[in-house]
Amino acid sequence: MKKFLFVLTLAVTGLVAWTADPATGYKVGDVATDFKLKSVDGKIVSLANYKSAKGFIVVFTCNHCPYAKAYESRIMDLDKMYAAKGYPVIAISPNDPVAIPEDSFDNMKKRAEAKKYTFPYTIDETQDITRTYGAKATPHVFVLQKTDKGNVVKYIGAIDDDTENTNPKHTKYVENAVNALLSGKSVETNSTKAIGCFIKWKKDA
Image (tube, rainbow, N blue to C red; front, side, top):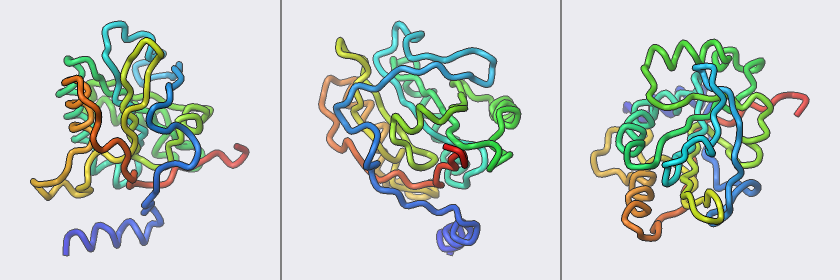
């Protein structure tokens, strides 16, 4: 019943987005471009700034989406588990704040402070990085591995297969991917469906 009500609420508000892997944007094996995005602490965040990183967990997420809210604690846990091991979380808010005022930069700052985010929470004001990566939903994850060729995409998709975080036996896709990379192994499941709210694009985009 709880799951039914959760899905029904999302459906009524028009926020359900069962999205397949992006037809455009990055595929597993591609080299991801760097970016320079403004974070809620006023700093400009770039992958190049993380000299000692082994890779990155790039998460497209936002304030307003019920799915993003449901996964918020798990995103925080990912940073706590893997930042010290060389795979920090970098969160990117992709939405047009004109369309969704709750996702404005000021509201991002308030949420990050209230929730005590340990990772940078950045805004893609032009939505260029969102388009380049091929993010279609919030949350949508791209696990990158730093190599001599650049930051290679090793996993794309969902954080896990339990949107309500109620199944102790759920498959932790991102954790499994990062653990494999840290062990020098290939990622067994390197692409899944990102389940979340549609990206809210600028009208003139």
